[in-house]
Amino acid sequence: MRRIREAVFMGIGILVGIVLCGPAAQAVEAVLTASPTSQTFYVDGQQVQFEAYEIHGNNFVKLRDIGRIVDFGVTYDGATNTVHIDPDSPYIEEVTPPAPATPAPSVTPAPTTTGSYTISTDHWSREDFSQQANPAVFTGIYDRALYNTIRQTLVDGGPGSAPAYTMVDKSNYSAVKKLLGRMKSTKRLEHYVPENFVNYYQYLDYFAASIEMPEQYHAARDFIQPLIDQTSQLSTDREKVEYLHDYLCSLMAYDVKAVTVITEIFTSHNGEIKGACGAYATAFSFLCDASNIPCFIVDSADHSWNMVYADGRWLYVDVSADDLHGNKNALLVESYPKHTDIAPQATAFLKELLVPGSTK
Image 1 (cartoon, one colour):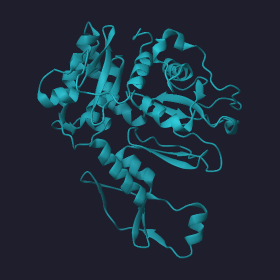
Image 2: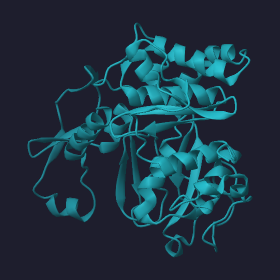
Image 3: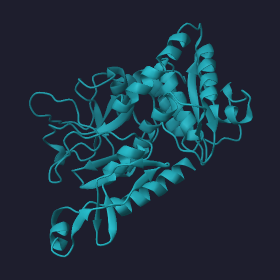
Image 4: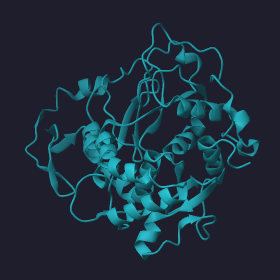
């Protein structure tokens, strides 16, 4: 339900948020007049301020402004002249929007380095991390080159190093981006193209990843620091996971129709924050990452939960189900019957990405 609501909201945003630009705008400029609108806008019952204009009896709002208020990803890819909307990513402000006529980053710019950035092979990383992993996980698009690219980014832990990369065909791009999205935590893994990449035209399937904490997550991370300090005093990962599970249950209340985000969950508020399963899974990943516990999200056709690596093995945790039913039947279990993972190959790949050799 959360995804459906977000999709509907973005559909509305697209209809009212198209900004006139380029030749098409010049062609109609003579017959259309834009003036600041007097319309009042509300999001979740609270008034918000948009730079909005009335054109030919309709209100027009920038799609980026909607993404900023509602907190979903809106990015522009100059190489393909396309706009990308991602309801599973937070909004990230682009300091210098890319020019339509030149190749540009699709999500976030790469760290600036001296000189131009040129590649001459179809994949590169400083180390072959795939040798540490269970070879059985390398199937289809989830190959060794992609593994090394993402693993190198995880090991580097942030901007500043020459990016590892591979080639991902456009038909597989969506699946790889979903793979990155399942590792939601205190940081975000995103695809980008370096700003100073001079031969992009030769490697249009180039894929590298950046990892950093979104600016809006800093306050949420500070909010949970006392909890993380307490968790660090516990002896085992199992105890830590149980502690984080109980904390999140005390903080949230399950509501299949509710939409909430990290910045609303981990902040001062009165009463429990209502959220659906996806919000629970994302929040739990956030807590686990802050406690240095490997964790990622698993999805079925209509539900989301987590897998965590605790005390030497991967286990299932479904905080939303436990909170809804008032029990701990889905806490650190080895199997999760009646819950079908829609991407089992990606799940196996993720286990080895976060903990190499953990499925051997």
